[in-house]
Length: 323
Image 1 (cartoon, rainbow, N blue to C red):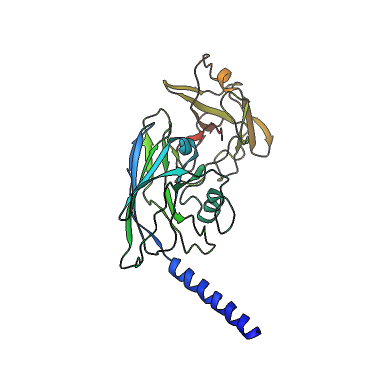
Image 2: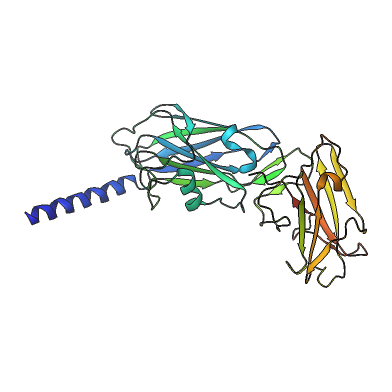
């Protein structure tokens, strides 16, 4: 009897190993076609050519990594065509879990795949096919199921440089810990969105210096700008006074305040550490009904000749954080 039980356990183990082998590498992203640039507010079309080389599974999962500022959940549609059928895809609720780990799909993809070359400010949104399509017997590397996923998404309202990402998996078995039944891809070339006033937020570049400590804020809030002259070993280390030089960017243009007066003088709060608190509408004399899209900032000494910008030589960029 014990030998029979041992044999059944061994047989089950072999079946599991065989199943994992069949599923391994069952998805492949062959090519992504996405535009190199877009205009703010434009709807762009992206196609993802893929193939399925395993016959297990039936319900396609597709993930799209985009800037949070694009509000992609509200502004993205996904469909597909394939050699075994065509269909549409619907958003998975953020709380919907996969069959294997019982964890939310978007959360798992974020933790295990990340955001590619973006420093942050991104999100994964996940879609599931509205109909099941079962790969036929004989589906393998030599006889794959070929298909194309089409993504239509509206880019955000501000200038931005970002790397987009794509994920493929299947709902029947879930998201295996070893990733053997899924794949992902980040387009190497970053997409640039332009057409708005102001400087582009470069998510593909190094993480920017954090000048505002609040986790969320708008430019209608009281905000405190903090400058640490010792960070990046700036030329304002040891300065007796530091002044804020800034431009408030609106749709119609910019309002610059760059003067060495009590209005722009920062308060020393520690060794080479400076702060200035403002309510932006008042500081920049913004009329009611008008709004600020971003602030461009640099820091200067009392003479105005010693100027500190970011490591790339551009003004520091401060954007609202509403998410």
